[in-house]
Image (cartoon, rainbow, N blue to C red; front, side):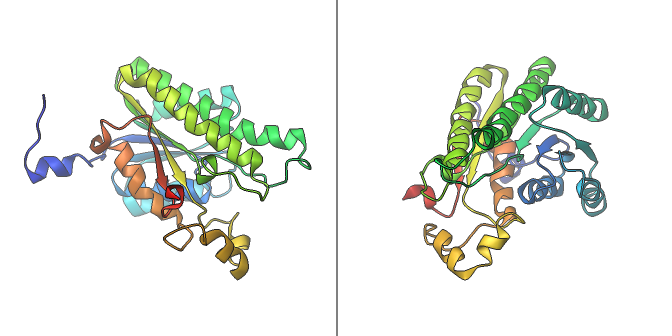
Length: 265
């Protein structure tokens, strides 16, 4: 049995300096916040997105404000070849991948009887298939290198609770991510790969801003959140650092709600 003593060793539990993280969806609000947050803790960043706009600027901001290395890569998470190329470039540049954070995702809000099958499938492709492809590609390298690592997926409070306002595709996809997270955790635990999921409530982003700027809509959404406000993208940095660090070395297959208490109701 291992024991730890002393404040220095306790502080080291959260030390992730020098690790390498791949962030998908890095051009979005959540991906950007997590990229900047991990870089501030000394992590080198592989910033991936299928939207080139803002990706180079993010990498430059990371370099200038944190002094860490940053590699921007265009990547379509639904395409196996694109993901494999991204992983290979990351390994060529850094030699290892310690952390994966899958922020790439999409939402399509429409009542089920009116939703086209193609719209449903697109949500599933990005949120579920994209998560699977990225996690599998990175896990294969972690296993091959024998280094272990931390994989952090992104679920949602909607994966726990149904909603009448057209979240059928999105909620179902996030419930699938929750289960996929647990299954991957069980399969890869023997390789010292921990797989956990962060499940947010509604948070501020360019996509949600039109809704949250409306006082009536804001009240409607935040009335379900015991802490009484929508989250900020930066609210998820602390949970990410915890799950990426040795502080969570006995935590795997866990869905961590960062939702102001919503999932507790």
